[in-house]
Amino acid sequence: MNFTLSKHAKDVMKNRNILENWVYDVVLKPSVYIKVQKDEIHMYGIVAEYNERCLKVVVNPIKEIIITTYFDRKMKKRGCK
Image (cartoon, rainbow, N blue to C red; front, side, top):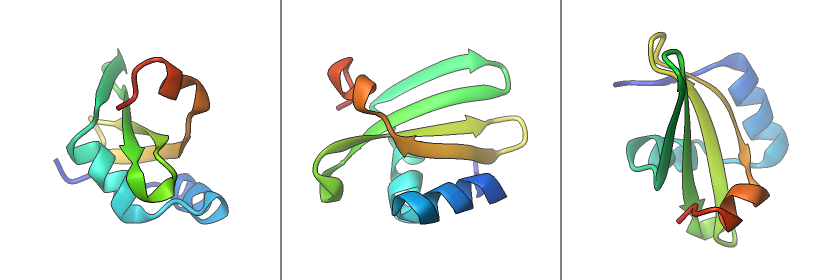
């Protein structure tokens, strides 16, 4: 699937200094994949270039859009690798 970035995702990426390639790396190879609903999936992955922090990417697979993204401190302790 080819996911596009929502306006909200672009805004938060800019405000939080999250690079687009980090987001797409997580989407392509998530270390944790949680299907919340049919139209919402949470994907997690470690960003080595950003002090090994766990990046969460929320996507809508039906519309093929990235809704939001942020670094999740709690998930790092729960298995984000």
